[in-house]
Length: 84
Picture: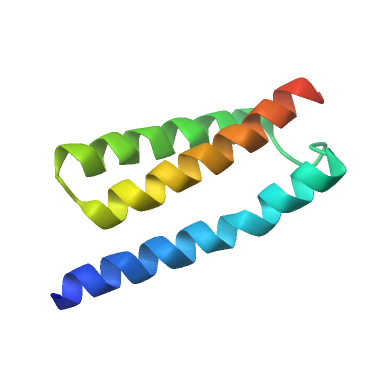
């Protein structure tokens, strides 16, 4: 495996794993008061665009990471809208 691929996968894992505690906390508490609806909306849209970019360029680390983060971010965004 090339060094760039290893770095890409490591970045994908670290970025994705760092997002998980926020999702778990939000799922448990259903408290979204500290989350900006505008920021999460923009963030989720950005992640969706990164996913499209990853697919279009056949970049597996970008695609895999952004599939996972898009699911997690969408969950938090849905909770923010639901428990507003």
